[in-house]
Image (cartoon, rainbow over all chains, first blue to last red; front, side, top):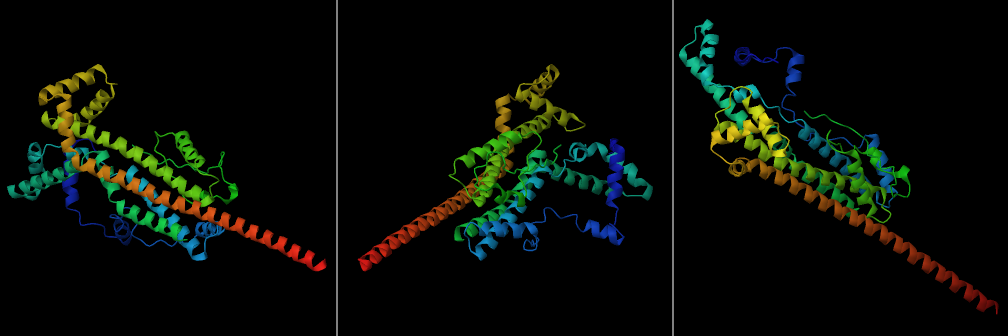
Length: 174
Length: 212
């Protein structure tokens, strides 16, 4: 991790020039960048060993075959959501302290120095400064780690609601 | 920094279930705890919930385990509400004192956290008091301002707590329905047994009449 603010700014300026991954493996990796929790994919519980074991055990409690299948799938789905909830809560997006704390106005001479080798116009420097200002505003708006994890966990509320409703329905109708 | 701590909540110790080998819990992922949380406390909460049920079935035990996890989440989110306020207080203090640059902000947050917990060193107390004077605020003013500043996130945490309450309600209803179902089955078994015994008595009586 770079601690020199000048180098950090230079790295970020260079990163902006990146055109993304070129290799197939790189593209495959970056295609998963926006994957958050995987709860939008349809799970295949029926083929798992846990599902079959649960169905057998629930059947011993006097539930019908259909009800056992529903309850087992409901339980596994609920656990899947709660595991994703825990993971989201414990690994929020890290705070970019450099971006949050950097004084953009004071960094303008550094931007000028970094952009001058390509014969940049003052407009480029202004654009770069305004870009950093807007990024900084976004970063500050997200708040600290607790705000971030609360906001991230909040996005999973609907998955929890659906999972528990499915489980509860299966148990009560069984 | 938070680390994932995995441990199995296989309720083996004094679990009031007829047959422990029939537990559903080994087939479900276990609720996880944060590093600073007590496993013993979690287990004792689960045991006390289970002790309230009269001979629970394996499915009821699995649902009670989920319910205990919900209670745990409510605790976590309640702590988060206070932490959010602290975060906003530190942010406001550093902003009012125009102290965004360098490591001032994180240093101030740590000092404020210690100050509010009553475990601050002398230099931390001095830093906070200086920052409060700079910002021309008292601690209660700062708290009030921070509450306004963090209102959006506090509302989110309230939603999270509400969601857990709703989940608990669903789980309670499910447990009640399992309990009712098992009672109903037991009652029907008893009635059937009573009918069978009545019939066998009647049969014996008619046989006696015929023979006499």
